[in-house]
Amino acid sequence: MSEPALQVDSVSVRFGDWIAIDGINFALPSGAFMTIVGPNGAGKTTLLRCILGLIAPTVGRVLVFGKPPLDCPAGWMGYVPQVKTLDRSFPARAVELVATGMLGSWPARLDRASRDQAMTALEQVKMEGVADRSIAKLSGGELQRVYLARALVREPRLIALDEPAAGMDVTGEADMYAVLEQYQQRTGATVVMITHDWDASHHHSSHVLVMVRHQVAFGPPEEALRESVLGKAFGHGRHKH
Image 1: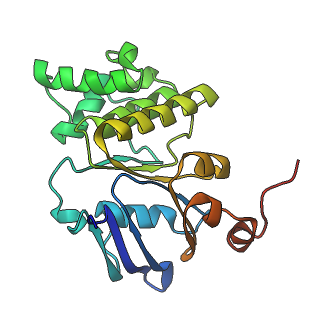
Image 2: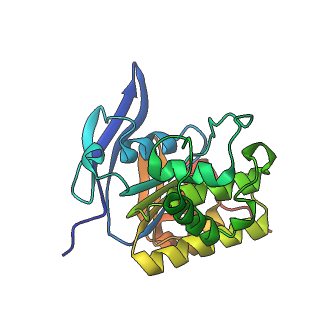
């Protein structure tokens, strides 16, 4: 049996007296598409940051392809954050933002090889037309797609996304899922995504983690997104129409 892409063993995170997450425990196979769902304040982003190595668990451990996150080679993981800390007034172009995903810093001058690699990533998300546009002039949906290109630019083995559909219209959201699924088919990558969209979770996931600081359910969507599970996590199930 192959090694899991992601092993989360009894992970808890405390900030002082506050328990952000408590006892999260699952193994995710390589090539899976996992969504994480739960109400606001459920600890979803905290868990994602543990997976990326940005936060150390207070208890337990996280392994990414058998290694602690901070021991993973550069380029193994790509990340699309929910909250962009980017100063939109910074005088930079979209292609340069994508290039920071492989260079680790803003390029003083973008060489031909780096530009070509960044352009390939922008083409994957259908944003090659904004390559030389100032980031200040990108719409919210365009910026989100450029960040997705930034996450894909080094062809990571694991892609972590925190509410990636934020700011996108329906067409942009559909395009994003198509990009992720095509990328998975081509590379065998693993996707871990936080979402509030239960329908998207049901239709696109191979695995779903439902959490409210603690783990409510983990498994295939038809099991993890049952009405009884959603009722425990959110206090209600799907609205009837």
